[in-house]
Length: 168
Image (cartoon, rainbow, N blue to C red; front, top):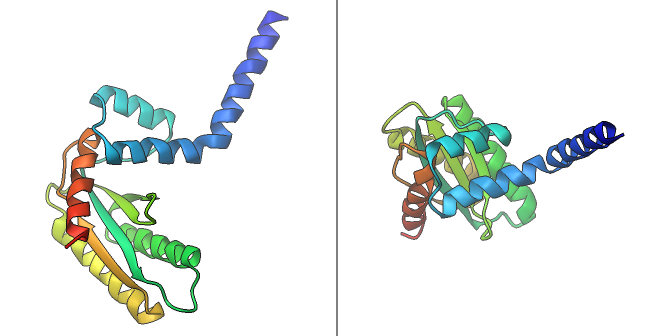
């Protein structure tokens, strides 16, 4: 009886985690973008638990915000198009990315790379995305790229640099 009840509780918890995994992943990664992370070993455990792939060993954050949406495009549709175009372009350039939207409707692109200085490559991809969307839809973007960091625990430093860049 007790064994069956314990198994039932474990199954319930597994389903609860599975059903809420995307939200848990987003909450965890947004936390890393906004404040210092904890020790690397603990971070790696949390990433495994949340099934988040960020192999690194280098990371950079690029932020893209829409300055002007096309007149005939709803904001949600425009942001989805931007996220999809950005994710595809980054993957085609060999970057692993995770794209999250912050409270100000800016896309925060976490770039995971083996390159210690990927800034020029990231900038090239973002410029391509900006030009493509401006040509296809008339959407105008503003972007900033943060400095490359060597730990997910320092991701917030890269985001701070990207925010500075976006405000120029």
